[in-house]
Image (cartoon, rainbow, N blue to C red; front, side):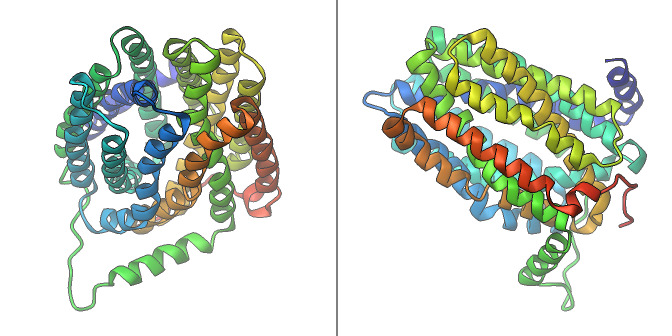
Length: 414
């Protein structure tokens, strides 16, 4: 913890970093409210099933996959903070509308599908821009510290949001929690718009690259690095499995076997608390081979998936969720820093978009199949099977020489 406060104090005097940090902290409180509220909101609708929850969650992830590459091109052509702030503000309108529909008993599965699709589209613009913004406002020497401090603050607030979301849904329903989520996006968007001078609009001339040329250039930066390709392909499977459990199977299992939204919010809070500790660990580590360390830590993710299918003891589930969170954010910090320090900054958002595109490519399919699989084979059996698939996937990723040999380095020049 001492390292966190030291790095936070060191970076706090940088006004752009302070603004970005506060925006992420605020919006992640809302991100904590959303998972429990949306999942149990869908399941609370008259006649709704696990399959309906699958449809709503798949509608969120499908545009992330379809439009992520476009988002990378946009983020490398226009000021990234402008894209992030505008996306957050637009997203807030649709999220608040969704909450209002719940509060007035007008919400339906079909309306949620439409709102989820729009939200996913805006997130496809947001994510590549965010990946490229931090290196623009923090120098190379402090980049991993900045990634860690932002993740620490965001995950800490996420815990409070999850607990609050579970309490609100259990006591008065999902509507107010979803409205609160939308308000946090609005506030965060206003904050980030104050950074809109960071990043420049690319000057367009007759010699400027076309969108297709940008896509090809980003693809070359992506495909020529075996470590990037291996990790992204592996996470195509892992993200599919985790999102299926996080968004569909976990809430459905909680409704059937764990007494509803409050226990599920405790499990998610333990997961987020683990993410906070994962950031603490990442801030203390400068491993020579960051991807090896990060991927080995993902054994906790596999354990979480399998135990979710084998146990209904809330304390055991919270313990493995906590360990899972540590492994997830330790990997994420090391992975983001590896990308930011090995990819030329001018191409970073495009490579990040290929990363996100590939990692999420199967997530919509997994979400569509998760509900029907749970109803056909049992939710417990489905989660155990996904955990075993992820275990094999991790071993395959670690077998790639480029993954094992990648070493930490300083940021490449622009």
